[in-house]
Structure formats: C-alpha cells, structure tokens
Length: 394
Image 1 (cartoon, rainbow, N blue to C red):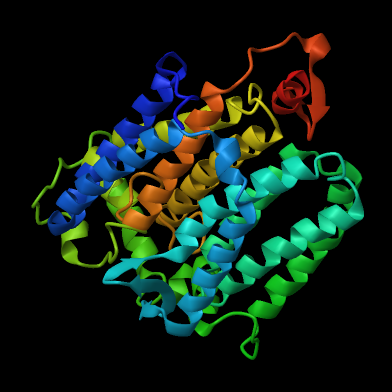
Image 2: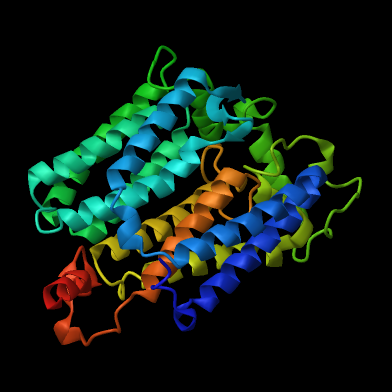
C-alpha cells in the first residue's frame, strides 16, 4: 500500500510554506475568536496526518473509484439543500452523527479526483465536442446544487477549478475561443438583469451585495458596512500593525463591526494586527504555494497527476485572490475562506488531503525531459504517460 512513499522526494519547501501559512492562520483565528484557536490547532494536526497518509498511497488506485466520489459528492450536496443547517441566509452545512461539516468545501477535492480520472481516460478525445459536452454536463450538476444553497462564491470556484483542469487536459483552443465569444456578452446581459429589482436569478441578499460593491455609499449602514470597516481596519494597521491580539480601544476588530472575522474576513485581522508587512507575507505565501502546485504539472507522471496539481494550484490561488479581494473591497462580499488561514475544519482538511495527493504525484513524478521530447497539452509541456509505458513493459 505504501510502496510509493519516498522521503527523499517529498517537497519540503512546499510543506514549509503550507505550515507557515497555517500557523499564521492559527494566530489570526486566536485573535479573532480565542475559543476556536485550539480547534484550529487540532485541525492542523489531523490535516497533516491525513496529508502524510494520502501522500504514501498510490493516487492511481484512489482515483480508480472516481465515479464513487462523484456520486457521494452529489448526494451530500443534495442533502444540504434538503436537510442542511441554515446560517447567515444560506443553507450550507450538514450534520451527520453529531459532526457538522460543509460539503461544498469537500466538493472541491472530490471533483479534482473525479476529473483527474475522467480527463486521463478521455485525454485522446478531450478536444472532441461530445467529451467536452459531457465534461461540462457533469460539472453543471454540482455547480447547480452549490448555487442553490445559495453559495455563489464556491460555485464560481468550482467553475474556475474545472476550467483550469480542462485547460491542462488539452481542451480545444477554438472551442475555448467560441465559449468566450458567447459567454462574455451573455455575462454582461445577465449582470445587467440581476441588477433589476424584479430579477429572480439571485437571492435578494446576493443582489444587495453586488449593489453594495458598485455603490458602497448607498449601503454604508447595511450590506457594505463590513467591507468598509474591513478596509479601514487593514489601513489602520499601517506598516507594522497594532500588535497581535491587541485590546486597543482603537481596534476596529474589537468594535464588533466586522462579523465572521475568523473566517471570511480573516485577512482583516492580519492587516490590522500585523500591518502591511504581515499582509504581504500572507499574500506571498499563498502565491508561492499556488505556483509550486502549478510547477508540479510539468513533471507529473501522467495526465491524472497533471490535473491534480493544476486543480490544487487553481483552488489555492484563485480562492486566496477572492477572499483577499472581498476584505479589501476589490470583489463583492462573497463569503469564502482564505486557504489554510480561515477557521473551518472541512476546508482545512480538504486542502490538506489535496496537498497529500499532490505530494504523492510528486513522489511518482518523472525526471524533467529535454524540450525536444516534451509534447504540448493545453499550452503546458506534458510528460509522456509513464503509467501506460510501465504497463506496456510489464
């Protein structure tokens, strides 16, 4: 079972970056909600254990059950809508046996594993319209179930991860150009429609968040006040911040104007208490982790490994951008955690599991070949499918 484990091929640089970011998050969560800090530490310990176990397994054997993961994912997302717990105007949590978790966060790693197998199986036909259409149809089901919770931010993230994986899989550029030619004007039309008072595409609170982003002055005392105070708190931290867990009367975090500072607005805690330097450190760590994931695409053993690495890179990178964008007023308030920083055990464990698969891909990766022997898949240099070569040799 653990034949693939190779201590010498563990990416210790990536592990150092992740642990550093997670420790940053533990301190920030402890400042925002001291009662949750121990749980976050326990979550990190369990997450590291899951990561190490998964990194020692052969990811080919795990993704063999891809359709099982897909069905489990759909069932859990459906149960959320049917019997899930409600909070903050959304129904996103499921309680089973006394354990409460968020299936939409677990959906990301389950979909990455599913498409790793799916794209590898159909890699020679991924450019054809039937396979591409099937790929899109399969992602639309979880997308719709997440959208209905409603969870617009996670549904967008699912589409981003899917798009990156399909790009690495080698989807036709002509098809991509055609999709963009149709989707961009369609998106503008839909955006204009959701701004109308009688629209039914979005819930009222989602529409208000978009309007608050466009016209914050009109929603300063309601929908936009958290974002406004978040930007003020980050700016008040200046270069070095006000100090960790400050009890200063000038702290906007202690004023109570910023709710969910341990999750959606955790970057606000970092900006106020650790200042510009601390905020830049978190941004740099997220960027470095995402880049490291994408770099492993080049040396992955086969297409499945490439898809896993690309999916994790997109997940960590783009979700980090979205969370920080909300805290700084660059994006509408979407409610999405900052990877490895925000409080939330489902998100944290799912991320560590994904990193475990990525480490396993790296352990089985091939040595870098010369440019002459490297093909082209999705605009990214692709290594030959060594799994198939091994099968032929044996």
